[in-house]
Image (cartoon, rainbow, N blue to C red; front, side, top):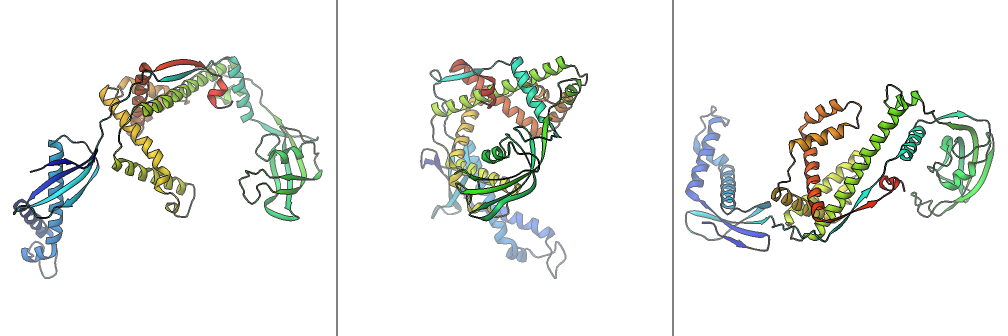
Length: 433
């Protein structure tokens, strides 16, 4: 007999009964199987007396048989009562009970009922971005700068030049760690070195030596130098002027346009920009849609799922740190509470998406998957090969299917929310503003 009782809004307690005669029969069958192959000194294989086998392996066989019996009884009970178990049950033995049987209580959580809230009053902004000739021109300039080369220049260093320097820094008259270098190269005005340092080099000529004082920023990454006043002595060895490639047929060929035709090059650049705009627009819509779903939908989260997700995030963070070369044990500072908010968001959103996908039939259709695969492949040099590769990798195809289902959910949200087009500058959408 199984009796279900509530031990909380999501926590359930289920009584499980295991018949002793059935358990003993299972133990006996297990011992017989062991006896067929067990090796023991003084006996030939398969000829060890059952009494000795039972003495040696009886406890193990009983534990395994009992575990299987409890698992089967629990599985049958939750199936019969149509319970959706979240996580793993905690099995507790019960005292007393009727003769000829063992009784247990299984304590577990079930999945919550998820009712998505009203989206009719929710406001979502849809970015609208124009990709014109100005955006193409700006992208071409970026591509030119990525292919810059430097030629020696016998003149004073100016912004945009590459300078080769020797330098030595002191603080209070004493050298400090990282404050000295020989043959170092920096592009003036690029911002990779401190602004005041780069500014001091501008105007120097090859062979010049210059001393100057400067103060490190308060938020400098090396805390022992943050906010400290230092003195640098710099010698400029060489100046090299930036030379950008001409926008010609050779330049087009470096971008994969085999014909070298500039109009074809510009069309391909514009197409790539439009695909990127579409991708980023969809990402902004998805972010808003997910946040709105979280805001309007409230329900209790199973503690078991939260703990599992927290552990998964911790493990992922530790593996990431190890891949970056960290030798120390990251568990000493990666505490569960650091991941609780993220775990809560992921679990809640996952349950909402699962409910919507199931209830409104938002699963990925083959033509949708095919369309996303082909669109993704367009950004590569050989799209057909990329399509074949994705379809040959089940794990990558699973990722595409997940993305399609998320897009289906976003479309479902947009159909019900108040969506307003919002004009946005290209640079703002790209994060350059």
